[in-house]
Image (tube, rainbow, N blue to C red; front, side, top):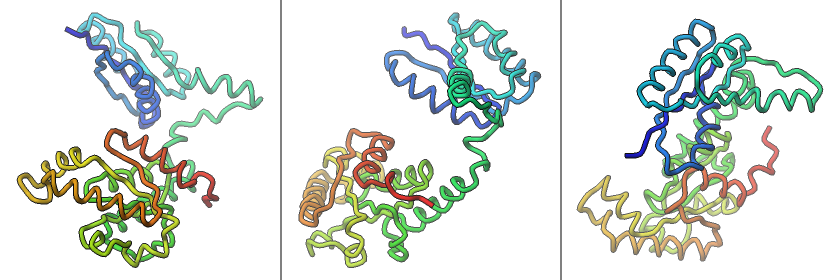
Length: 275
């Protein structure tokens, strides 16, 4: 039986940074099971002592030394954490200290800088992008598309909505998405509302077999979810995108993060001036 290692994400803020960084590292150890415990808003020594109790209990239960990933700013709280017998990975001491030495200045050591409202411009940009993306999901509205950074097209359930939302939340990118439907395939041309925004279009495709699995979860035993219909729609969508010169990506075996990173690179959104 595979042993489970407990990993704690300890932060005096939301803990999002600790969890994101740690999961990037943990993904390299795919044969080990990790039990993840989140401990946000640990901003006093008293709260840290409560965390230490949980870490010690995990060590007794697992009979293995826990792993602790911390993004603690307060040095007093951070010092208390080192009382526990665990592998403690302090991201700020690992990265901030060398940066301070290189830049010749001391960091702000302020809690919540990366996810709070400290960066008001970036925060407001993400909120604006999320609102735009929700208002332009699944072809609900074709107004204001000139303000879109990218417009995703593809058959229903090919991953357009989750990718659009990820782009908005993570990068502040205004992403609209439009489903390609049988009527579009019969005309063999893009809807008129998308014609003038051709340079912003990016397609997502998927294998018919995987598409049928996803659709059956939503509408079992329907024509919509049948393998034959999925084959026909995927082939028609690819023909249309090829004819219209639309770049596309197969989302079948890719994560949302991989799709977003590839899309940003392909479309060149990073090179844009984002005021």
